[in-house]
Image (cartoon, rainbow, N blue to C red; front, side, top):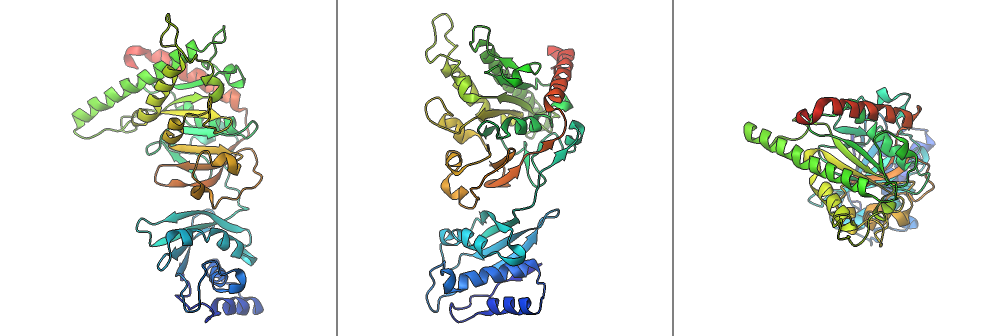
Length: 420
Protein backbone atom coordinates (compact mmCIF):
# COMPACT_ATOMS: atom_id res chain seq x y z
CA UNK A 1 0.00 0.00 0.00
CA UNK A 2 1.39 3.41 -0.98
CA UNK A 3 0.23 6.53 0.79
CA UNK A 4 0.94 9.83 -0.90
CA UNK A 5 1.82 12.76 1.32
CA UNK A 6 0.27 16.20 0.93
CA UNK A 7 1.58 17.28 -2.37
CA UNK A 8 3.41 20.60 -2.34
CA UNK A 9 1.21 22.58 -0.01
CA UNK A 10 2.53 26.10 0.51
CA UNK A 11 3.96 26.55 3.97
CA UNK A 12 1.65 28.39 6.42
CA UNK A 13 -1.26 27.87 4.02
CA UNK A 14 -2.29 24.35 5.04
CA UNK A 15 -2.77 22.47 8.25
CA UNK A 16 -4.30 19.42 6.59
CA UNK A 17 -2.04 16.86 8.25
CA UNK A 18 -2.61 18.32 11.69
CA UNK A 19 -6.37 18.36 11.15
CA UNK A 20 -6.48 14.70 10.05
CA UNK A 21 -4.42 13.73 13.08
CA UNK A 22 -6.69 15.74 15.40
CA UNK A 23 -9.86 14.16 13.97
CA UNK A 24 -8.39 10.66 14.27
CA UNK A 25 -7.49 11.30 17.90
CA UNK A 26 -10.93 12.76 18.78
CA UNK A 27 -12.82 9.88 17.23
CA UNK A 28 -10.24 7.21 18.18
CA UNK A 29 -9.72 6.29 14.55
CA UNK A 30 -6.78 3.95 13.99
CA UNK A 31 -5.02 5.11 10.87
CA UNK A 32 -2.80 2.77 8.87
CA UNK A 33 0.73 3.29 10.15
CA UNK A 34 1.90 4.28 6.66
CA UNK A 35 -0.61 7.14 6.62
CA UNK A 36 0.06 8.01 10.25
CA UNK A 37 3.81 8.33 9.61
CA UNK A 38 3.23 10.46 6.50
CA UNK A 39 0.93 12.80 8.44
CA UNK A 40 3.35 13.15 11.36
CA UNK A 41 6.26 13.97 9.06
CA UNK A 42 4.20 16.40 6.99
CA UNK A 43 3.15 18.17 10.16
CA UNK A 44 6.73 18.36 11.42
CA UNK A 45 7.97 19.86 8.16
CA UNK A 46 5.03 22.23 7.81
CA UNK A 47 4.79 23.69 11.29
CA UNK A 48 7.13 26.66 12.00
CA UNK A 49 6.69 25.92 15.71
CA UNK A 50 8.68 22.74 15.12
CA UNK A 51 11.62 24.68 13.80
CA UNK A 52 10.88 24.87 10.07
CA UNK A 53 13.71 22.38 9.41
CA UNK A 54 13.90 23.11 5.67
CA UNK A 55 13.97 26.89 6.32
CA UNK A 56 11.03 27.42 3.99
CA UNK A 57 9.57 30.84 3.40
CA UNK A 58 5.98 31.87 2.69
CA UNK A 59 4.94 30.45 -0.67
CA UNK A 60 7.61 27.77 -0.87
CA UNK A 61 6.57 24.16 -1.27
CA UNK A 62 7.18 21.06 0.79
CA UNK A 63 8.77 18.01 -0.80
CA UNK A 64 6.45 15.16 -1.77
CA UNK A 65 6.35 12.37 0.80
CA UNK A 66 5.27 8.77 0.21
CA UNK A 67 5.37 6.05 2.85
CA UNK A 68 5.33 2.31 2.12
CA UNK A 69 5.35 -0.66 4.42
CA UNK A 70 8.09 -3.19 3.73
CA UNK A 71 9.46 -6.31 5.35
CA UNK A 72 7.73 -9.57 5.94
CA UNK A 73 8.54 -10.77 9.48
CA UNK A 74 8.98 -7.38 11.12
CA UNK A 75 7.27 -4.10 10.35
CA UNK A 76 9.40 -1.35 8.96
CA UNK A 77 8.73 1.44 6.51
CA UNK A 78 10.35 3.32 3.66
CA UNK A 79 9.58 7.03 3.65
CA UNK A 80 10.35 8.43 0.20
CA UNK A 81 11.03 12.18 0.14
CA UNK A 82 11.63 13.94 -3.17
CA UNK A 83 14.58 16.28 -3.62
CA UNK A 84 12.91 18.59 -6.17
CA UNK A 85 13.73 22.15 -5.16
CA UNK A 86 16.26 20.99 -2.56
CA UNK A 87 19.72 19.47 -2.46
CA UNK A 88 20.09 15.79 -1.51
CA UNK A 89 22.06 16.95 1.54
CA UNK A 90 19.14 19.09 2.73
CA UNK A 91 16.71 16.20 2.48
CA UNK A 92 19.12 13.66 3.99
CA UNK A 93 19.60 16.02 6.93
CA UNK A 94 15.92 15.56 7.86
CA UNK A 95 16.63 12.17 9.46
CA UNK A 96 16.71 13.43 13.09
CA UNK A 97 13.64 15.62 12.44
CA UNK A 98 11.70 12.63 11.11
CA UNK A 99 12.74 10.47 14.05
CA UNK A 100 11.66 13.09 16.59
CA UNK A 101 8.33 13.56 14.78
CA UNK A 102 7.36 9.93 15.32
CA UNK A 103 5.07 9.91 18.35
CA UNK A 104 1.98 8.07 19.53
CA UNK A 105 1.61 4.66 17.89
CA UNK A 106 5.08 4.98 16.34
CA UNK A 107 6.94 6.48 19.30
CA UNK A 108 9.36 3.53 19.33
CA UNK A 109 10.24 4.00 15.66
CA UNK A 110 13.21 5.93 14.27
CA UNK A 111 15.16 6.42 11.05
CA UNK A 112 17.86 3.74 10.95
CA UNK A 113 19.41 4.45 7.54
CA UNK A 114 18.94 6.39 4.32
CA UNK A 115 19.17 5.43 0.66
CA UNK A 116 19.65 7.84 -2.22
CA UNK A 117 18.52 6.81 -5.68
CA UNK A 118 21.08 7.01 -8.48
CA UNK A 119 19.41 9.99 -10.14
CA UNK A 120 19.29 11.80 -6.77
CA UNK A 121 15.59 12.49 -7.26
CA UNK A 122 14.56 11.21 -3.85
CA UNK A 123 15.86 9.94 -0.52
CA UNK A 124 14.45 6.84 1.18
CA UNK A 125 14.36 6.99 4.96
CA UNK A 126 14.14 3.49 6.44
CA UNK A 127 12.03 3.64 9.61
CA UNK A 128 12.09 0.74 12.06
CA UNK A 129 10.80 -0.17 15.49
CA UNK A 130 13.86 0.17 17.71
CA UNK A 131 12.39 -2.15 20.34
CA UNK A 132 12.22 -5.12 17.96
CA UNK A 133 14.77 -7.84 18.65
CA UNK A 134 15.95 -9.37 15.38
CA UNK A 135 18.51 -11.66 17.00
CA UNK A 136 18.64 -15.32 15.98
CA UNK A 137 18.73 -17.83 18.84
CA UNK A 138 20.21 -21.27 18.26
CA UNK A 139 19.97 -24.21 20.65
CA UNK A 140 22.45 -26.30 18.66
CA UNK A 141 25.02 -25.84 15.95
CA UNK A 142 22.99 -27.99 13.52
CA UNK A 143 20.23 -25.39 13.48
CA UNK A 144 22.72 -22.82 12.14
CA UNK A 145 23.11 -24.69 8.86
CA UNK A 146 19.78 -23.75 7.29
CA UNK A 147 21.31 -21.39 4.72
CA UNK A 148 23.53 -22.10 1.70
CA UNK A 149 27.25 -22.20 2.50
CA UNK A 150 27.68 -18.96 0.53
CA UNK A 151 25.41 -17.01 2.88
CA UNK A 152 26.24 -16.33 6.53
CA UNK A 153 23.37 -15.45 8.85
CA UNK A 154 23.80 -12.50 11.20
CA UNK A 155 20.24 -11.79 12.30
CA UNK A 156 16.72 -12.21 10.96
CA UNK A 157 17.21 -9.38 8.46
CA UNK A 158 20.91 -9.46 7.66
CA UNK A 159 23.21 -11.93 5.93
CA UNK A 160 26.72 -11.79 4.51
CA UNK A 161 26.61 -12.98 0.91
CA UNK A 162 30.06 -14.40 0.13
CA UNK A 163 29.34 -14.34 -3.61
CA UNK A 164 29.26 -10.52 -3.60
CA UNK A 165 31.34 -9.48 -0.57
CA UNK A 166 34.97 -9.79 0.47
CA UNK A 167 37.15 -9.91 3.56
CA UNK A 168 35.93 -8.65 6.94
CA UNK A 169 37.20 -6.40 9.69
CA UNK A 170 35.61 -6.96 13.11
CA UNK A 171 36.41 -4.27 15.68
CA UNK A 172 35.34 -4.06 19.28
CA UNK A 173 36.77 -3.80 22.75
CA UNK A 174 37.02 -6.67 25.23
CA UNK A 175 33.66 -8.23 26.14
CA UNK A 176 31.93 -6.68 23.14
CA UNK A 177 30.93 -10.08 21.77
CA UNK A 178 33.40 -9.84 18.91
CA UNK A 179 34.98 -13.31 19.14
CA UNK A 180 31.62 -14.99 19.77
CA UNK A 181 30.19 -13.18 16.74
CA UNK A 182 33.04 -14.40 14.54
CA UNK A 183 32.67 -17.96 15.80
CA UNK A 184 28.97 -17.80 14.89
CA UNK A 185 30.04 -17.21 11.30
CA UNK A 186 32.68 -19.98 11.25
CA UNK A 187 30.16 -22.46 12.66
CA UNK A 188 28.09 -21.93 9.52
CA UNK A 189 30.98 -23.08 7.30
CA UNK A 190 33.24 -25.56 9.13
CA UNK A 191 30.59 -28.29 9.63
CA UNK A 192 30.30 -28.67 5.85
CA UNK A 193 33.88 -29.91 5.81
CA UNK A 194 36.66 -29.13 3.32
CA UNK A 195 36.37 -29.19 -0.44
CA UNK A 196 38.85 -30.82 -2.85
CA UNK A 197 40.51 -27.50 -3.64
CA UNK A 198 42.73 -26.69 -0.63
CA UNK A 199 40.05 -24.98 1.43
CA UNK A 200 40.94 -24.14 5.05
CA UNK A 201 39.58 -22.69 8.24
CA UNK A 202 42.82 -21.27 9.61
CA UNK A 203 42.67 -19.58 13.01
CA UNK A 204 45.64 -17.52 14.22
CA UNK A 205 45.87 -16.59 17.92
CA UNK A 206 49.02 -14.57 18.72
CA UNK A 207 48.32 -14.37 22.47
CA UNK A 208 47.93 -18.06 23.33
CA UNK A 209 44.45 -17.17 24.61
CA UNK A 210 41.25 -19.24 24.50
CA UNK A 211 41.34 -19.66 20.71
CA UNK A 212 44.75 -21.33 20.93
CA UNK A 213 43.12 -24.23 22.79
CA UNK A 214 41.17 -25.11 19.64
CA UNK A 215 42.69 -27.85 17.48
CA UNK A 216 44.72 -26.73 14.45
CA UNK A 217 44.91 -23.13 15.68
CA UNK A 218 48.28 -21.54 14.89
CA UNK A 219 49.89 -19.54 17.68
CA UNK A 220 53.31 -18.12 18.59
CA UNK A 221 56.49 -20.20 18.52
CA UNK A 222 58.08 -21.50 21.68
CA UNK A 223 60.49 -18.55 21.60
CA UNK A 224 57.59 -16.09 21.23
CA UNK A 225 58.17 -15.48 17.54
CA UNK A 226 55.78 -15.70 14.61
CA UNK A 227 57.53 -17.97 12.11
CA UNK A 228 54.89 -20.70 12.29
CA UNK A 229 52.17 -18.07 11.83
CA UNK A 230 53.91 -16.56 8.80
CA UNK A 231 54.36 -20.01 7.25
CA UNK A 232 50.65 -20.79 7.71
CA UNK A 233 49.63 -17.48 6.12
CA UNK A 234 51.98 -18.17 3.19
CA UNK A 235 50.28 -21.53 2.71
CA UNK A 236 46.87 -19.89 2.77
CA UNK A 237 48.00 -17.29 0.20
CA UNK A 238 49.38 -20.10 -1.98
CA UNK A 239 46.03 -21.87 -1.92
CA UNK A 240 44.44 -18.83 -3.57
CA UNK A 241 46.69 -19.27 -6.61
CA UNK A 242 45.91 -22.99 -6.86
CA UNK A 243 42.16 -22.46 -6.49
CA UNK A 244 42.22 -19.68 -9.09
CA UNK A 245 44.13 -21.92 -11.51
CA UNK A 246 41.36 -24.51 -11.17
CA UNK A 247 38.71 -21.88 -11.87
CA UNK A 248 40.65 -20.56 -14.87
CA UNK A 249 40.87 -24.08 -16.30
CA UNK A 250 37.15 -24.66 -15.82
CA UNK A 251 36.40 -21.31 -17.45
CA UNK A 252 38.44 -22.22 -20.52
CA UNK A 253 36.50 -25.46 -20.90
CA UNK A 254 33.12 -23.84 -20.25
CA UNK A 255 33.72 -20.75 -22.36
CA UNK A 256 32.39 -18.50 -19.58
CA UNK A 257 33.76 -17.40 -16.24
CA UNK A 258 33.19 -20.09 -13.61
CA UNK A 259 32.81 -18.77 -10.07
CA UNK A 260 34.12 -20.63 -7.03
CA UNK A 261 30.65 -21.56 -5.77
CA UNK A 262 29.69 -22.85 -9.23
CA UNK A 263 32.73 -25.15 -9.05
CA UNK A 264 31.36 -26.53 -5.75
CA UNK A 265 34.23 -24.99 -3.81
CA UNK A 266 33.70 -24.22 -0.13
CA UNK A 267 34.68 -20.82 1.27
CA UNK A 268 38.12 -20.70 2.85
CA UNK A 269 38.77 -18.52 5.92
CA UNK A 270 41.82 -17.02 7.60
CA UNK A 271 40.81 -15.66 11.01
CA UNK A 272 43.47 -13.35 12.49
CA UNK A 273 42.71 -12.64 16.13
CA UNK A 274 44.21 -9.71 18.07
CA UNK A 275 45.59 -8.07 14.94
CA UNK A 276 47.64 -5.40 16.70
CA UNK A 277 49.42 -7.99 18.84
CA UNK A 278 49.92 -10.16 15.76
CA UNK A 279 51.79 -7.46 13.85
CA UNK A 280 54.16 -6.87 16.76
CA UNK A 281 55.47 -10.45 16.41
CA UNK A 282 57.31 -9.59 13.21
CA UNK A 283 60.52 -7.52 13.16
CA UNK A 284 60.48 -4.31 11.20
CA UNK A 285 63.77 -5.21 9.56
CA UNK A 286 64.57 -8.63 8.15
CA UNK A 287 67.66 -10.51 9.27
CA UNK A 288 70.20 -11.77 6.76
CA UNK A 289 69.69 -15.43 7.66
CA UNK A 290 65.90 -15.13 7.24
CA UNK A 291 65.13 -12.20 4.90
CA UNK A 292 61.41 -12.98 4.62
CA UNK A 293 60.71 -12.96 8.34
CA UNK A 294 59.59 -9.35 8.78
CA UNK A 295 56.53 -7.14 8.95
CA UNK A 296 56.83 -6.24 5.25
CA UNK A 297 56.35 -9.89 4.24
CA UNK A 298 53.35 -10.24 6.56
CA UNK A 299 51.72 -7.06 5.23
CA UNK A 300 52.36 -8.04 1.59
CA UNK A 301 50.82 -11.50 2.08
CA UNK A 302 47.78 -10.05 3.81
CA UNK A 303 47.31 -7.42 1.11
CA UNK A 304 47.41 -10.14 -1.53
CA UNK A 305 44.84 -12.29 0.27
CA UNK A 306 42.47 -9.38 0.92
CA UNK A 307 42.61 -7.97 -2.62
CA UNK A 308 42.71 -11.24 -4.60
CA UNK A 309 41.17 -13.90 -2.38
CA UNK A 310 37.44 -13.31 -2.83
CA UNK A 311 37.45 -14.41 -6.48
CA UNK A 312 38.73 -17.81 -5.30
CA UNK A 313 36.43 -17.97 -2.28
CA UNK A 314 39.19 -17.07 0.21
CA UNK A 315 38.50 -14.51 2.94
CA UNK A 316 40.31 -12.88 5.83
CA UNK A 317 38.58 -12.04 9.09
CA UNK A 318 40.60 -9.50 11.04
CA UNK A 319 39.74 -9.05 14.71
CA UNK A 320 40.99 -5.83 16.26
CA UNK A 321 40.25 -4.22 19.61
CA UNK A 322 40.23 -0.69 18.22
CA UNK A 323 39.91 0.43 14.62
CA UNK A 324 42.95 2.68 14.98
CA UNK A 325 44.98 3.46 11.88
CA UNK A 326 47.90 4.79 13.89
CA UNK A 327 51.30 3.11 14.10
CA UNK A 328 50.79 -0.51 15.16
CA UNK A 329 47.10 -0.47 14.30
CA UNK A 330 45.25 -1.33 11.12
CA UNK A 331 47.06 -0.06 7.99
CA UNK A 332 44.92 2.39 6.03
CA UNK A 333 45.22 0.23 2.93
CA UNK A 334 43.63 -2.73 4.68
CA UNK A 335 40.91 -0.63 6.23
CA UNK A 336 39.81 0.58 2.80
CA UNK A 337 40.18 -2.86 1.18
CA UNK A 338 38.04 -4.78 3.68
CA UNK A 339 34.59 -4.84 2.09
CA UNK A 340 32.67 -5.92 5.21
CA UNK A 341 33.05 -3.80 8.34
CA UNK A 342 31.60 -4.68 11.75
CA UNK A 343 31.94 -2.69 14.98
CA UNK A 344 30.77 -4.49 18.13
CA UNK A 345 29.24 -2.48 21.00
CA UNK A 346 29.82 0.59 18.84
CA UNK A 347 30.65 4.10 19.95
CA UNK A 348 30.66 7.06 17.61
CA UNK A 349 34.40 7.89 18.01
CA UNK A 350 35.35 4.31 17.07
CA UNK A 351 32.85 4.22 14.21
CA UNK A 352 34.39 7.30 12.60
CA UNK A 353 37.60 5.31 12.12
CA UNK A 354 35.72 2.81 9.95
CA UNK A 355 33.10 4.90 8.16
CA UNK A 356 32.62 8.44 6.92
CA UNK A 357 30.59 10.83 9.09
CA UNK A 358 27.67 10.95 6.63
CA UNK A 359 27.21 7.17 6.86
CA UNK A 360 26.80 7.46 10.63
CA UNK A 361 24.45 10.40 10.92
CA UNK A 362 21.30 8.28 11.32
CA UNK A 363 22.64 5.78 13.86
CA UNK A 364 21.72 6.29 17.52
CA UNK A 365 24.76 6.61 19.80
CA UNK A 366 23.56 4.70 22.87
CA UNK A 367 24.67 2.00 25.27
CA UNK A 368 24.83 -1.30 23.39
CA UNK A 369 25.02 -4.87 24.65
CA UNK A 370 27.54 -7.62 23.75
CA UNK A 371 26.73 -8.92 20.28
CA UNK A 372 25.20 -5.61 19.18
CA UNK A 373 27.05 -4.10 16.23
CA UNK A 374 27.07 -1.63 13.37
CA UNK A 375 27.51 -3.35 10.03
CA UNK A 376 28.13 -2.55 6.38
CA UNK A 377 29.17 -4.52 3.32
CA UNK A 378 29.83 -3.41 -0.24
CA UNK A 379 27.58 -6.15 -1.62
CA UNK A 380 24.95 -3.84 -3.09
CA UNK A 381 22.48 -4.52 -0.27
CA UNK A 382 24.21 -3.39 2.91
CA UNK A 383 26.24 -0.44 1.70
CA UNK A 384 24.66 1.78 4.34
CA UNK A 385 25.69 1.23 7.95
CA UNK A 386 22.96 -0.50 9.94
CA UNK A 387 22.40 -1.98 13.38
CA UNK A 388 22.62 -5.77 13.74
CA UNK A 389 22.57 -8.28 16.58
CA UNK A 390 24.74 -11.37 16.22
CA UNK A 391 23.25 -14.79 17.03
CA UNK A 392 22.75 -16.04 20.56
CA UNK A 393 24.10 -19.59 20.78
CA UNK A 394 22.83 -21.63 23.69
CA UNK A 395 25.43 -24.39 23.46
CA UNK A 396 29.20 -24.70 24.21
CA UNK A 397 30.57 -22.90 21.16
CA UNK A 398 34.28 -23.60 21.73
CA UNK A 399 33.64 -27.30 22.27
CA UNK A 400 31.56 -27.59 19.10
CA UNK A 401 33.92 -25.54 16.96
CA UNK A 402 36.81 -27.67 18.22
CA UNK A 403 34.95 -30.86 17.33
CA UNK A 404 34.17 -29.65 13.83
CA UNK A 405 37.76 -28.46 13.27
CA UNK A 406 39.03 -31.96 14.11
CA UNK A 407 36.58 -33.49 11.65
CA UNK A 408 37.39 -30.84 9.04
CA UNK A 409 41.13 -31.45 9.04
CA UNK A 410 40.77 -35.22 9.46
CA UNK A 411 38.71 -35.24 6.26
CA UNK A 412 41.18 -32.91 4.56
CA UNK A 413 44.07 -35.20 5.48
CA UNK A 414 42.22 -38.27 4.29
CA UNK A 415 41.74 -36.66 0.89
CA UNK A 416 45.47 -36.34 0.32
CA UNK A 417 47.39 -33.57 -1.37
CA UNK A 418 46.95 -34.98 -4.88
CA UNK A 419 43.18 -35.03 -4.57
CA UNK A 420 43.04 -31.70 -2.72
